[in-house]
Image (cartoon, rainbow over all chains, first blue to last red; front, top):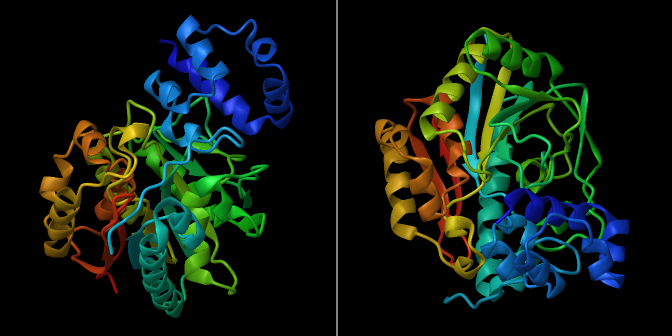
Amino acid sequence: MSRYEVNSLLYRLKKDRVFRARFNADPDGALAGLDLTDGERAAFRARDMERINALGGYLHLVMSVPGMAAHVTHTEPE
Amino acid sequence: MGKIVFAAAMSHVLDPDYYQAACGLTGRRKVEACMAEIEKLGETFLARRPDALIVVADDHLNAFSFNAVPAICVRIGRYVNRMIQDDAEAFDKVLDGMPERYTLHEELANRILEDGLGAGFDLALSWEAPIDHAFLSPVMTMHGARPVTPLVPIWINCFVAPQPTPARCFAFGRHIARVVATSPWNVGLIATGGLSHFPELRLPRVGESDVVFDQKLLGWLAEGEHEPLRSLTPAELDKAGEHEFLNWMTLIGAVTPARADVRYFGELGRINLAAVEWRVA
């Protein structure tokens, strides 16, 4: 697990609109050259935010990357 | 001689649309009730004619990611900008429409920083870090359309382990109190975030909160029993979803042994919403 690589990638996806567009158009190309494990690379390619969180991705990032954010909803009792 | 004229802590995603989307009408109603109490706290605060408002809050991986993550950071300079997030989602959306620039109380911030380093607190400083909803959602709810009081934003690292200990945050709060007492200003102090939510920061646990832990904390605050709070550990806070209580610990250190009055507590699985005022006037 590479906590820094996972989170710096999440951060870049959130804050860098150009990189985010590149990732959306060509995930493999955007991820090329990054120091990710095969599992981490697969999780990002699948946009699996729960898996990314389990791999060390900070919760507030996985819940707020535009277009990829995990939206957990639930009904609250009255 | 300066004085802390107002002290309160409160939840900091004050957005009915967010809670309705996350957990339905119950969420919306409860955050609206919490916001109504925070608006009243704003009236109380402004009636005391404060010169500055210290805001102790946390960074949600927006300002300090990842070239440095300070344990405690004081924002200095003349102005601070709010975070700008394109295509904002979830809790980031609450910032949309807020003013982009806010005046800082430069001299108070500098005293907290410089005296702090002299007193053994190895504080970080920033001239550039923007502030996110943790600061501005409570500040704007308290002020409404009125001019915003000059701010002193202070970040506590609540989320990126290893965090500072509750005892250290409490000690830093004592430092803030000493600085204010030797200043010429009337100062308000708020701590934001919480209460219990997002235990262990795991996505599958979003929707769980620890009401029992919160009630224990609020009981101690109401009685002014601060010693048990200083013994809490970051691991306990992580398990109970109380990460942002580190911000509260800083405020508690600044006002100890004052007792608190719970103005609002609303149970939600998403988060237990709260607004608490300390008897400092």
